[in-house]
Length: 549
Image: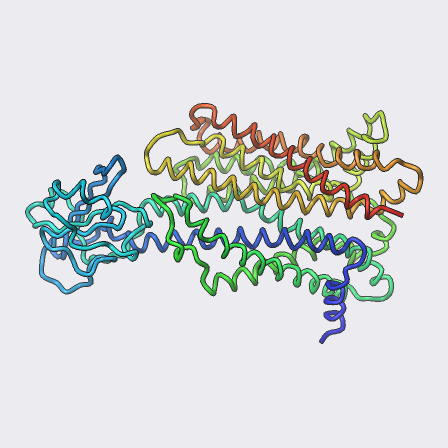
């Protein structure tokens, strides 16, 4: 085994003072990343699986002169107050092609196949269709969800209707329109949640990497090469990332039955649709550790280049106001293409807007910190302001996911659907709730890990302040203030920026009806402040212990 690899594994087992708390925080945050990535992959594939089973119902690709059959859909039917889909199938010419998915044979005129849920309610439909009992029950292979209400009956060619859908096979490979719409919505959701998720990855890696900074700097000063230091850090982070990926996969597996109950796309999911395949597992086990290692190595660039600056606590280079120009790119792209554009340009516009927030955040924190320090009339505000001004990137990192969640909330507040009974609106409402849930999980994990990381990061300065006679209460209050100020000073404008991007996309029209958008914005602010307060309370004992003499 490579000596540096062995040393890295030893450091994982014996992380040193404060290292265990940092590693546990990093492990927990990485596990959340793994769980959410698995959920996004499995959910997207689940929609494809559902579409594969029911896409043939919307097929209309065959030439009427050569088609083997015709379909007529009627989605205006209701049974016991709930919507039901009826498909009339007419066989136009003899054939031996496989029957529709979930059926043991192609229905002949007068034969009726129903879903399991509809079979339970057949007594209310038997007179209407003149059949005492259905010919058969559609299996899972032909249903979108377990509770789907669908009836497939065979009819004579003369009764199929004036404008049927002609098919060359009962198993046409066609993407279901509703599932296709949901896949597009998922793509937008991934674009919105991507940057908070990447911030969580960076936070998870940064918490553990921060504890290594002085230790690795000492190794550099003792003669270790840059490559050796980076390899040592990569080994440590890879072990933590792999462990977190495994925990996240196990967590997703345990939660799969609960996730399957989400009524998206017309009903609950079959568990097998969202069960991860072996290659999904390999993707997560490879991607999460790699992202963690890359994030850790980026954060350790200062150690590998200037170890003396780390040991001396040298102030980082100031950020530039030129970053403000990035704010214009996203809204311009969204306004130029509008709601009718292709998916890719819109995803690029959203991604650029979120990227601008992530890049400009440290500069805004630096400006706020300098202002706070200049206006301070006491030690609490002065310490908090100096902390923000001296290390704006480090101060912004713990709240980056929270600030980016404000962008997501502001953006979707423009598009909150009304109480319409249309299925697409129902999907949109559930999708918004699901997206906010994913973002909240990301933010909660990032804020919790950030609280530990910030406490450990400030242990050295806090220890020096305590030795010089500064009361612990002053140090803790300044730490809480330094955590809250970026959330208010940066987070609130970002919420407005998100709403601006949403308006740019919609052409200045607020699609939201009622007060739901306003309630969403207020909820974002309240949830953000509560998370920061809870994180500050959780980080206080860590800071107290780590800064003790």
